[in-house]
Length: 430
Ligand SMILES: Nc1ncnc2c1ncn2[C@@H]1O[C@H](COP(=O)(O)OP(=O)(O)O)[C@@H](O)[C@H]1O
Ligand SMILES: [Mg+2]
Image 1 (cartoon, rainbow, N blue to C red):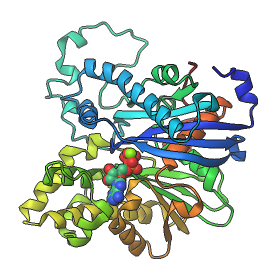
Image 2 (cartoon, helix red, strand yellow; image 1 turned 90 degrees about the horizontal axis):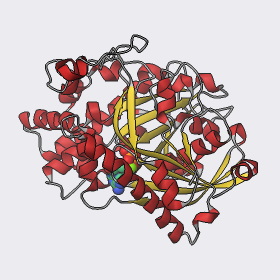
Image 3 (tube, rainbow, N blue to C red; image 1 turned 180 degrees about the horizontal axis):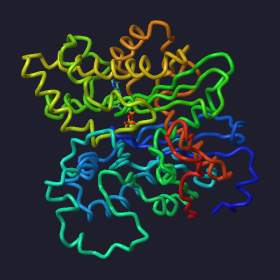
């Protein structure tokens, strides 16, 4: 085990960032050399790899994400199992890089989100579990209601109490790797009234803010999120939000129509062969989430499989071909991103350059359409700035762990809506 105070004194550290996003496609592991901390932070990516989940695991994770299939005993066990898989990902990337655990100072692990309930009261939920008529709704559970609730606690109200749950037990990661591990970053922001996301906005600020250009950082994972960094702006000028589905609905529909033989639209080829159907998109754009001002976040709870299957049914009702449906969903991602920018960002801070990261960067149709619609903005994969598009989120969690180690706050209230800046995460020594 590294001596904690020795670790703090080191100016240059090797930190492993671990991330698995809403796409549940694999564990992103990045070995990052970090020099300094706070505004002085400099990073260099040493190695990166997405370690796929073992067969059957994504399905088990997706079952945990749904109120009707996420059993508490499975969640309990999977928290440890996913922790073990994250530890395996660390061992894998170390072996591949011919490094050993003793070379690494720290791990920052995002974990795997299985539920995210930011609970903006303006958003009418479509989730059955929120509905009082649902048998799982707490108001329908007599044994729960009969528990005496201490008067000092706020009453439990499922539609207003914000919460989020990332699993992948850090004690397991720290034990199995022998490396100090910081994890569970989102909850501190949410405890302070924030959305718990996007947390990447602060690392984005550290790496990309500059005096001359307004920079946008768009990550297209399962969900798409955008951080806008006004030229020469301070922390409190940063504006961030999830814009809606990124690849999530496209992936779900492709998986459905190919009966699982394809999981995503490779390079956006299917979308390129189809034609988007604007009248359906116009209907979909009526979803209230797309009209909420930032900060706002969403996830599989709102735009997961049920939503995607409704979209597929709407396309089939209009006799669209499968590729037309993929093109239409791809265009929904484009128009929700560009619509958000037009409605909430461009008026005050026109974006000069938009750096795109996440798996969506490989979807050429998506990238081309973003460039076409955002005609006054340079749209580029973030790789052109020297940061890997695939590794960027894992790098962000390595940076956040380094910030926590140094006692620096890692959230930005203007990005998440939290009432204060918070030091994020929970620290486990091996
Ligand atoms: N070659 C590709 N062509 C098109 N889309 C891709 C490609 N590679 C990955 N993707 C998309 O990116 C997703 C994974 O992106 P990622 O950034 O890891 O998302 P998350 O953070 O939600 O896990 C995949 O599910 C898929 O939709
Ligand atoms: Mg991923």
